[in-house]
Length: 118
Image 1 (cartoon, rainbow, N blue to C red):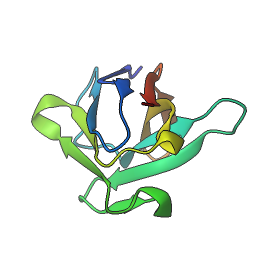
Image 2: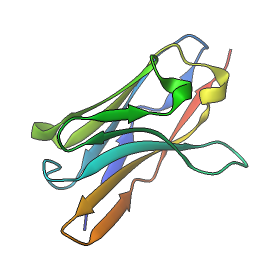
Image 3: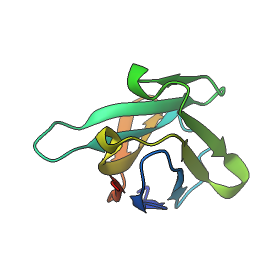
């Protein structure tokens, strides 16, 4: 069983920055991918950014150039650096892990609230 614990959320003014962290209970070096999703009130949960085992990353268009996903295998942690935050970035952010061995297993964290408001 894999446990994911997010941290780093909070209240920030428009234009500000936050860094989210997702700590895994096991080594992440062999995980197929890790990702950040977000869910705003009344909306579905959507992918924000993903990083694959080899280091390749992809982002939803709305955050390109502002958000950066990274992973530290030694610390079993994935980060999401969020800059130039906008009110529309307000949501609960969830960490996601995908493992293929060869069956696919998906794990979620409990979420961390990010609120962008003046």
